[in-house]
Image (cartoon, rainbow, N blue to C red; front, side):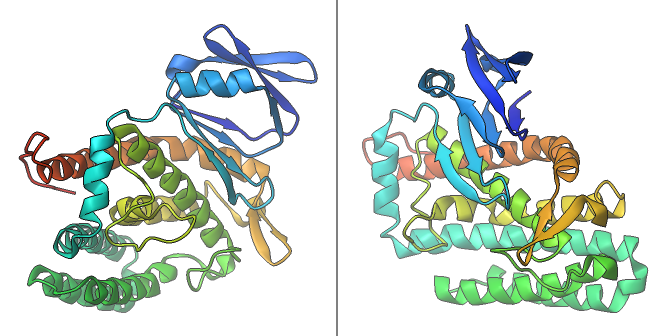
Length: 325
């Protein structure tokens, strides 16, 4: 078990040696060895003491606290940070290097568009009735990919190309779901339909994973290369998950077309579509395998970034190897 989901109101977490013990109404339910945990997701009201937080940090385990009603991130708890400040110094310098930022942005956005095309081709085989809309998206994505491959002179231009790709992609993606789900566009804060509710939760948990891994390898998750610095936003984590998003999109589509999640798993709450407790149980169960693959990819991205950053500093080892998202 790499992830512990605490999504039952009234749970109490205590430290029991090298394990976490879970209690409800004074009765012990189970225990989880700290050595097995990488992350904890708090979704419901949970009681725990400072020594539990200390044990989680000492074990290198991070936590994310989500609001119980809408699943919005409230807080992030970091485990033991990386000790090499030289990596962060090199990262701070790189954020001022427009050529370096452009190079890495091209790599990540090209990888994202490639994966969007991969999902559209898969959808074309699975949903031939949607042939025209998906084919139109594929043509647009291919054209944009070629433009990026020829070289782009500015990040602003890349942002425009990425935005055009996203618009074409989502026009086709929305057609993959039945009308009963009322999914017509990407919306959030709050999500207004079941598909957007699942996309938002999956993106939030994946973003948390990107923050967690960035800290582990010594990067500052607030300093990105594609997303500008913004108050309170981990811009590097936003960058890191861009190539991952199409994999999440496919996973969400699979949840609904296999009927693992259905309309009865959702409810409306003040103009927001909320995934109910039974639905969240299905969501978490099937999200873990995806998260394992996602964590592996994010770890690879971060390690390659660290190698590239170290090569920019004369005191640090020069990296070799290519980035292959």
